[in-house]
Image 1: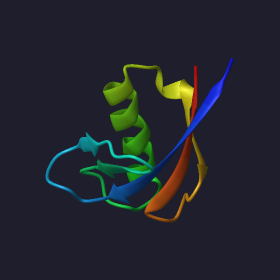
Image 2: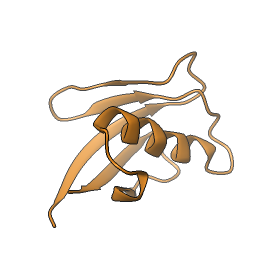
Image 3: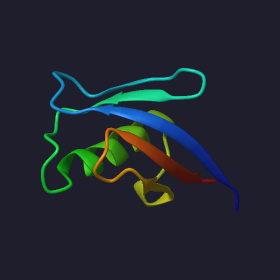
Image 4: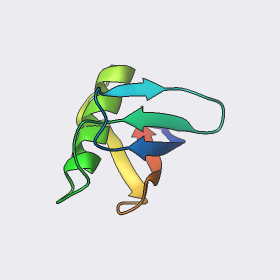
Amino acid sequence: MSIRTIFIKVVPNASVNSVEEAEGAWKVRVKAVPAKGEANQEVINVLSDHLNISKDKIRIASGHKSRLKKIEIQS
């Protein structure tokens, strides 16, 4: 099993859920508000759909209370 690391910038309270891939960092827009971990869970859901992998293979490694997050993806 290998772990891939990506860095994302989260835009909460967006009008649509989306992922924009760019070299070095990704931008993930989520409809959820940043309260009670709702936006973090939505980030995992959106990335899971975008990457077509199970949600349990995606983990927020750092940045739980920040817009900048380090994400670990198991493969």
